Length: 307
Image 1 (cartoon, rainbow, N blue to C red):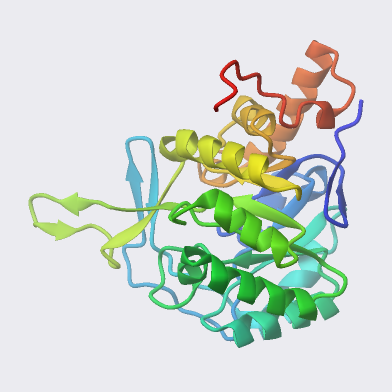
Image 2: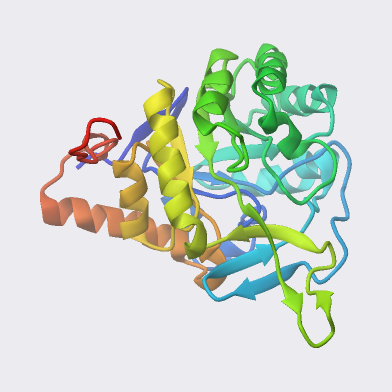
């Protein structure tokens, strides 16, 4: 039984990754299971300098998901390379860095440094809704997106270049094609959807940043649709995420065209969620007599050819 998939130059032992921002740098989760069971660990977003993030409260549970406005708090490039990367390198799993900047020059500098440090993959974060500068703005304009990806592409020699797209992109198919045309070896989607919550008694927003990003089961139907559309628009692999809580959810994304999947909010509910998805996919393949996970990719049967 083969569960291995290829994402650009990456060869993953199975298609399950973690979603950036939900898994820290892996340290807390390593207390629960061997991170080497995962296809890849995508770590918390990295900026050139440390970021403190948004004011508290930064997390709010909703009836079917979670709002967060962390604001990309992170230790910065220098501390990441010195203190965090060596830890994840102890495990037999691909290490993917999620990078963020407010200018193309910042993205390029970060990506080059991480590439030279030997990261297996670099995921460009052009989709975070919780910061006022950069991020999602690049994904809102295909010309800007293509220009950014092209500049980073020229700086990255060894790592697989992944571009994380925003559900707020005006045309997700056009955004995926722009990333591919500029040299991305894979696209990942979706990030959270902008949302807010309020305290009726106090007449105040519950999040210190007022608005945040909605994740979890509530966004899965949107994510599935966008992954399906993106997979039909590009030739490079698509990494699907958005409300994957179990193996059945993951398999739906694979049928929609995702070559790999990323588990995010579920990690907060069940610390073993990502490895549970790995084992659930293996169990499904055994039960159905499926020899190769790649045979399921894009296997959704649609009767109406217009869709």
